[in-house]
View 1 (cartoon, rainbow, N blue to C red):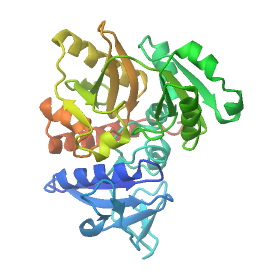
View 2 (cartoon, rainbow, N blue to C red):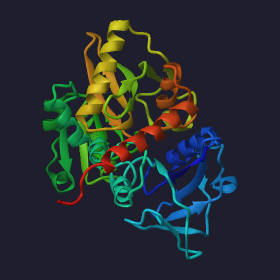
View 3 (tube, rainbow, N blue to C red):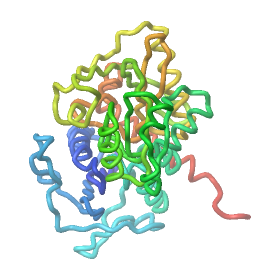
Length: 365
């Protein structure tokens, strides 16, 4: 059987660059080499694409705090519309062999938000994960929350603040509407980057300024008292949900440090110790969220379970982490889909969607 050539894109022009490197390393180590030829495409922090050699594509690969993308002299360019010459090695002025499918492992803006997905779609290359619309919706917490609210899915109450409104923000007004404590987040970022919990006026304004360092639109949310639950979703038109898992943070909240640096930063309870009927409710809500937000391929749904068993959706991650301590692959492993098989299924879903879309007419008869 001829091997499928998989291009793995990682790194990226985002504050989640280092997380992407960790995720990519795990996928590259786990992918089935009997089925796939792997092409490594590293994106540096300026957004330039390079062909990387597997033996030396990372520096400090075992240290999450020091991990870096190694420099490459082989810069790549994507050629939209050229099915047989998709990537040009600019340095050598020659085309790469055709890539059959792309696995983008790009967390955050310029990778998870529909930008890369749109470019790959123009180039007629199948890719893993949500399409342009689902990716964009999933990245923008404001739009995501409004769609979930309109679909009758419980969410935390929130306010949106644009950069030009920064001088009009009144702590007292926000406090009266949302209570204390407050969570302040960049609207278009993940991995807990730029997120703060504020209990005082001073903390609130510090958090506002921090969030605006990463985005021109920020979210201020009420704090939900409840257990932090995560559920993985897999599929295209008929998605399935994993067993739910619980995150018990050892700090004030599930921070970037706890997610990706400190293996002892949180306890991952897999499966979550909750009644079976509540587990089913969580899986059903996760699938509904996935569909409402126009997602395909994969996503991790983050939720809160309140004391009265109300389930509140926090957010969706359309390119969830694949690091050693990431919940998405861990939940599927416990649900009966080990890491390597999960990668196989994601690639199969990407090709299936591409073949489905290729049957659509693009010209009038």
